[in-house]
Image 1 (tube, rainbow, N blue to C red):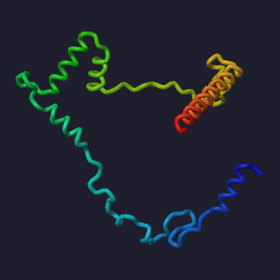
Image 2 (image 1 turned 90 degrees about the vertical axis):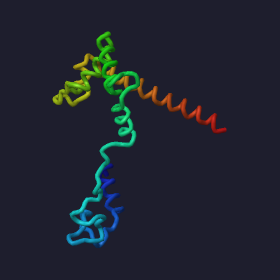
Image 3 (image 1 turned 135 degrees about the vertical axis):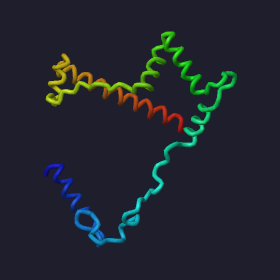
Length: 160
């Protein structure tokens, strides 16, 4: 027999008996009241997810405070000015942060060719032979096995 067919036969024999208030497909039968956790028409989470955490609220409160020795500027305004100064000095990360915060992060394009589904075609498209793919796969498997063996052997020495 095929393995998939054997699995289906096995699962059919192991199938649990359905409760009396359920259909054959596992759904509750119409008019069932025992299977409902919540009252019909009412949310199980009426308050919903909290909008902000306590840490977020504390940070927002700190950012809104007037900074010491800065006149009427808030902490948030000072941070923004420091970030702008860094960007003007040539700090690319600061410039990227400003752009991401003001204009949103740019979408990343992915080049996906759905016409090639066979790994052999993909290897040929990248200039690799079948032997190259097999040798790289063997190398990866061997490195994983050796790392697992090292981990197991080092774990045995610490347990004794």
